[in-house]
Image (cartoon, rainbow, N blue to C red; front, side, top):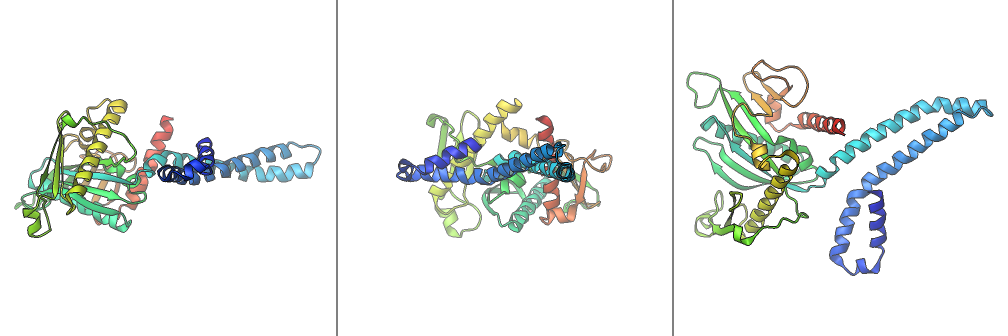
Length: 357
């Protein structure tokens, strides 16, 4: 990375680069991504060098006073070097995720009938409030409301500094245990919803054969008055080989909806290809979303006990029906106060990836 930054610095000083605005922008963005990390790396190298210098001074028998002073400073210098190395590792691990500026979040009701749709709506509200607290932008791309409130499915586009790095762990099955609004005898039901998180990768080239695509305009949905029903501002796209199809209706401009639909298709196809390479599964959406069954979950939301349990995190054992995991205050989580949970997941991911190295 340091070698690449030096190359970019040299290229930015060339007249050819200055005469090519597109190239200038691309190189400037890449430089901006590398600079903070390289600053930390250079600082680490200086600290590591100071440790070596202190070691040499401590071993100098010709100057006992200097050797004693160096020996006294050595432990603190070593500790600081290790701290900086640990921080550098975490930064490197999260660099790729933090470079992604926007992503699509798909929430779908799983098993549980009307209650699953209501829960899908609750999850959307939880994410909406969390994004609002972080000043991230969340736009609903399309949605299909369920009969008794909530959603059968909802697709949102999220953008903002650090948004993907924080919410990428939400992909998977979410299970809820509570007394539904539709329950007349007070019995606790278990329902499920599934979440997929698909990064919007503007720099990735995905080859799509035009013959594999069916697309057309469609009428929008949601707020917008009479224009929604009379004018085809939405866009529907079908990728026949994979069976993937998307409908975008968030913008009043059909051109914008078409661009967003194609972006989501490219992102999903890219994730599917990555999943095939790295996990030998048939697609990212299937891997993330699972079957929507109650047994496939990353997290359980237990309303009677006001407990939100993430099953990927080590911690106090949850109730016997939940298995292991770490518990969080459910009321706070559902109100969008997810910082404690997200921080724990980031630490868990860093530790897991470091151990794999």
